[in-house]
Amino acid sequence: MLKRTINSYRDSFSGLSKEVWWLALITFINRAGTMVIPFLSLYLTKDMHLSLSEVGWIMTCFGLGSLLGSWLGGKLTDKIGFYKVMYFSLLITGFSFIALQFVHTFLGFAIGIFLTMTFADAFRPAIYVSLKAYSKPENQTRSLTLIRLAINLGFSFGPFFGGIIIAAISYSGLFWVDGITCISAVLVMRIVLKEKKIKVDDTILVVEKENNVTSVYKDKPFWLFLIIIFLMGFVFMQLFSTMPLFYKEVHGMTEVQIGLLMSVNGFLIFLFEMPLIHYIEKKLFDRLKIVTWSLVLLAMSYLLLNTTLWSGILVVSMLFITLGEMLAFAFTNNFAMNRAPLGNEGRYLALYAMAFSCAHIFSAKTGMEVIARFGFMANWFLMGGLGLLAVLLMLWLRKILESEREMAMAINNQSRRCGIGF
Image (cartoon, rainbow, N blue to C red; front, side):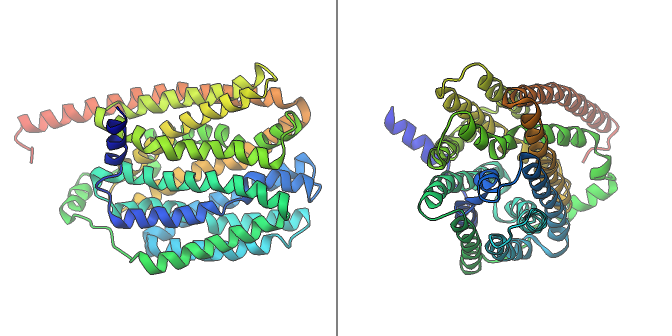
């Protein structure tokens, strides 16, 4: 039984290109240093002595920068290529994080975090598109999962060591580590990863032009999908804004304990996401149905927090969030990637990333205001309700896509009967 489990785990990683593994290493180095983000709300309230409302505005600037960065990243990826975008994003972000620790005013920090996230999140659509160049089509979901695995492995190290750095040195140490790891990731990238162009089949492009491929801005099912992603991100991102405050103020946890609990998320994803995705792909399960259930788990993770003051419920809630994240993020990203016509991947994936950025703009500010006025319990009810709304919209999207497939099959059958088929 143990041997079969080990073989299954090993098989889930087999067949991936060496470039994808290098991308994963670069991502891990970068994400291992992102220690500031989980502790940002604590830093702003404890060290800078800002109010919850001011923290909410800074988090809104964080999201606005992420939104602009994702849009620019998608545009630039289609114009100059993913490699250059990744390189300059990491380099400038590194120096921006180092500089951010020397800003001590509300307005200055708001502007600083906006600019930092603009540079940082240009990286996201670029690395998604890079998988089209470095990965075989049949391995793209697993390649994406490996990248997410690196992100979460880095995230499992980041909060844990971040808590230790805060206890041993100060919050300023986090900014230094964030900056240095971004710059280190650039150096590794230049040494081990060569720029590569995406191979495009000219015959496919001709067919797409003849069939008048729909613009992303006219793709109505994709926009419904983006609304779902917005709601999913809105709920999920409470983990990085209001949740650390809840841990500290309601349950009296220290920064080290908070970092350890949040590391559970990344560590479990590191252990189980890749084999889980591999198993789902082998069994050919309906991926959007799985995403639907993942949204149910995310909604329940917040509603559970209102059932008891027992501290163990924090672990149970984290397990629900983690499982929901594992099931949702890889397959929603894969949907966006496969929905995109060739040559427009950057635009589709930029909008996908921008949906998360929009969520970040409103999520933290909304959560902080609700907590300040009505308390944590009201916020958890709100997040659970929004998660369930996303479930309903996902059921609607699945019906639309099913009708779309049936219509496409009918047109294809009609074409064959008329002798038009290829």
